[in-house]
Amino acid sequence: MSRLELQDVRVHFGGVKAVDGVSFAVEPGQLVGMVGPNGSGKSTTVNAVTRTADLTSGRITFDGEDVSTVRPHVLRRKGLVRTFQGIRLIPELSVRDNVRLAAEQDGSRRRWRVGRGEKLPSDTACDAALERLDLLDVRDEAPSALPYGTQRRVEIARALATGPRLLLLDEPVAGMNRAEREEIAAVLTDLNSDGLSMLVIEHDLRLLLALSDHLVVLNFGRLLAQGEPAATAALPEVRQAYLGSAA
Image (cartoon, rainbow, N blue to C red; front, top):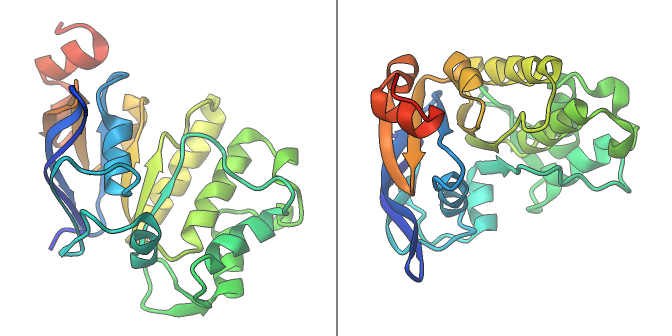
């Protein structure tokens, strides 16, 4: 059973076909990368998966359950958790309180430890996420006092503290320098090696080639190609769409 599956998903806004017949799956423990040029439909696909955009047609299943019309907060409780392109931390709260708030946001006091069959109290889950992301030393700091790359790690820790079964990251290295990108890449590799399923949307094709088990390429709202990352990126149609050259 796939962790996440999109079947002929379409999201149209009037005459604009933002997503037009996209199908792919994320298997348990798999890291799937999604790329495409600006306007290719990546963000709308993410919004459809996380139910902040309504489907025009098609079907989305999560752990075999049809979630095509499930409300976002219910989907989050089921274990599909996302981060956003922009930093969304609460500046008035410390790093630890930002993460703890996420762990408690649906009212439950216990969370699954990623990769384990073990439940944790929310405070423990919070501290475990901070430790996993190497943030214990800054747990009492305000997010605004931290470097951009560290703020990104706080956002990932916040998502991790909710006990996700699938983590969806929307451009997690956007705006970062090379060192910060390598830092986040190491974090994602570590989490995936512990069994966490992930869908990572990025413009950085090199990053996804290094991280992904499976690559999905969108263009003009449609699925252009998918498959083994290096072979898929080398396809002439992908090079033409993404790099502007079929050479």
